[in-house]
Structure formats: structure tokens, C-alpha cells
Length: 564
Image 1 (cartoon, helix red, strand yellow):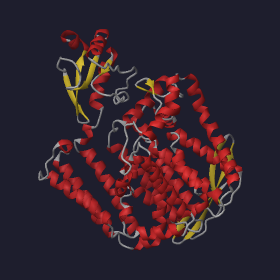
Image 2 (cartoon, rainbow, N blue to C red; image 1 turned 60 degrees about the vertical axis):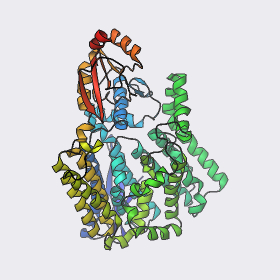
Image 3 (cartoon, rainbow, N blue to C red; image 1 turned 45 degrees about the vertical axis):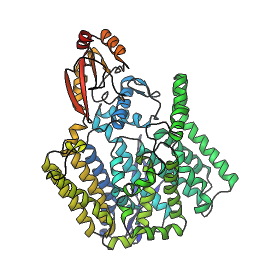
Image 4 (spheres, rainbow, N blue to C red; image 1 turned 90 degrees about the vertical axis):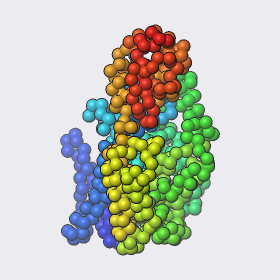
């Protein structure tokens, strides 16, 4: 088996060579073979562009991880689930605060534990897993572009730059969440469907599509079908040689069987050893509630549409983009398929009750490919000329006014201190906008998108926002007292501090004053904590720590036993 590597230069595609398996004793590796086509200068420039775009994305994501703390409640919760898997060694049943947790599948937590086998338990190492999938998604996007437009080697590498320029993509791709894994699954699945739509009738393509579906389920659950089924069902609208209905039904049956077989490797042992309540939660409740409502993320139907200007910033703010993209989509084929991929995700998630901005992450590569194809050579030479440059300038001016005290720093803005740091971020943001406006359209928009994301992260790293959302102080207090037992009251606890404090036992959650008194009597050396003013005890807290805008109080059990 071998794979040909093509990269772009100008309007040509250049074959670098082939990756072929090489066997050396018991070791297996890949070796680049074949000859280059093109002169030495072209080869060097092509390689620098290809590697530079991917390296830029990777470096930016790593830097962003370093610039912000674990964000509650998602990142803190997921690191706790991985931590408890590390403690228990149970790969089949996820737990949160040492209670069964059926809301997410296991792949992210498996991979974090795999990394920890090499590095030891490390927050930084764990936080690189999800960004790693973002980089893999960028590479897969290049591969998909090569399939969609085999005569155009420029679109793929350009799409990586476009992808890296989406500010929202950078923010979520640097977070410890599931969406980058799901994004990779969506790209791979679309690649399989494209080949099927071109007339390839190998049953192994359907089996491969099924394995991608299984991978998507492992990544984030059945939601992978929301991202891929519209592309499959609309194949007659974009594919030159779609399979007949009966053939497609047989192929999808093969895919479904392959996907179910893969998922069963985890699901069957998890269900067999789980409780009846766990089985119901895993198989039905948490998925149905996201569709029908009742979850924490219920939003109105217009929520995602209203946020599209921010989700698609900065590229959608270009006046050159929309006419060029419309022409591409009207031409049919690949662009029409990408439009269906992106548009169906927006529509379906708008109709589903539970929705968040990052649910559309798997659709962003489709938009990146459309943008890269639509702007093309036209965007390389023309000036940015986009309204996108105005947003970082306006935000930068706002930061300067805030630093000067002209705008009041109240509420959450009170954490934006010291003033010199806020002013520095404001100047950087203005520079990003002005610089992006003077550059060619594609590079200019990339500078604006990456620069704005960098300015936001710098604001977190250099001001009071970092300590305000850093759990270290609370975790240190809990870790020092964990031997006597811990309890939390007055709040819904999502294991925000379990990983940071390296807790090896559950935090109790007494629900009322009587339960608190009973717990304190059973744990005379224990520590109760919770939001000041919400914990139903008469005694004053021994000390307080502010975290995430909440003043957490700490009560040794002995003080509650004494005063009730």
C-alpha cells in the first residue's frame, strides 16, 4: 500500500513522491519514495508552505493552552473524569466525582490516560490531546481537498490557513473537549461519501464509512449521524455517479454493521456491568433530552443563526467571499456537497433544543474549503478590504478606554487589571486590525482571526482573569484537608476541583442543614465548602477564596459541630 503526496505551487500540483511502508525487522515505518517534479526552489517553497500552515496552527494552539487555566465547568469536569479513570483503572465505566457518568463516550479519556502512561499525570499533557485532533483535522482537510479538486493543489494548503483564521475554531480547538475528534470523524466520513458518489463501488468503502461512524460515536456519541447523514441522503444532488437506492441501502447496512461492531467493543461490557439506571441514561435519556429539551443548553431556534457572524469571523465579513462562493456552489459537485454539509449542520442543530456554538465545529472545515476555493487566486492579490478589520480595532479602542478609566470596570470587567496589561492588549488588537486591512485578502483575514484570538488569550494571561478562573487556590485548600473528608453544599457540584486537588475519594454533597450536621458528626476532621450565603449553616466560614465570581467559604466540621 502506498499514498501519493501532492502539494500546491501556483496553479499546478506537484507530486513529491509516495509514502510506502518499509519493514525493518519487527519495526514498521513509512518512507518517502519517488521523484520530485519541479526545480529545487519550487520544492523548497512548496514544503515550507505546506509545513508552515500546519505548524502555525499547532504552535498557536499550544500557546493558547499555556495562556489560560482549565475553564469551568467543562474542562475541569472532563479532566476529573480522566483522573478517576486513572485511579480506578476502569476503562468501560466513566465516573464523575466517583459516580457513574453516562453523558459522554470514553475516547477522549482513554487517550488522556494513554498520554499519562508516558508523561505521568500532567494537566498540560492532557490538554494537548484535543488540540492534537485539531491539527489532524487540518491535515485531513488538505487530503479531502485533494480528492474534491484533483486538478487544484492550491485549495488544500490554503484551506489550512483559512481554518486557522477562524477565531471561534481556535478558541474551541485549544480546549479539552470532544469537538475536534468529532471534526476529524466528519472530514473522514465526507471523504468516504465523496468516493462513493464518484462511482467507486468497493464494499470496503462502506465498511470504512461505518468505522468512521463508530469513531464518531466514540468521540462524542450518536451526534456524528447529524453531521454525516445529510451528506449521504442528498448524494443525488451533488454526486455524478450516486449508487442506486437498493445499492445504497445495502452499503449503509454494511456501514452500520461495521460501526456497531466497533462501538460494541466498549458498549457491551459497559452495559453488562452497569446498573439499570446507567443503561437507561447511556442509551436513551441523555441523547433524547438534548433533542427534546430539559438540558442545561436549551436555546431558542434562532440562537446559532444569530451568532453566525461571530462563528464565521473573519471570513464571512469579506464582501468578496459571498459572490465567489455562490458561483462555486451553483457549479455543483464538490462545492454543493460542502454547502450541504455546512448548511445541514446549522439547520439541524437549530432545530435541536440543546445547542452550543461549538456543536458546529465539524462544519467549519467545510466552510474553510469553500472559502479557500472561492477566494482562490483573487484573494491572494487583492487587499483585505473587509469589515472584519473593524472588529479588533473597535475592541482595542474599548480596551484602551477601559484601561484609562473612561469606561467603568464593574462586574466581570473588574478583573481586567492591571491597566497597563489591558492597554497593551488594546494596542495589539488595533495593530491586528490595521495590519490585516493592508494585507492580501487571505493572509489579511488570517492575521485578523488569529490575532484577535491571541489578543483575547493575552488578556486572560496578563490580567486578573487568569487567577479569577484558576482553581489552584481552592484546590490547594481542599487537597490539604482531603484526609478528613470533604463536602460541598449550596451548589450543584460538577467535580470542578477533583482533578486540580488530586482527590482520591468523592466529595459529599449534603442537600440541607440536617444532612450537613450529620456529615460533620461522621467526619469530625472534615471540611465543608460552598458559596458564602448559600450554605445553610450558622457558623461563619474560617476563610474565603474567590473563584469564578463566587466567594467560596470553608468550614472545618468541628466549627459546625460546635455551633450547629
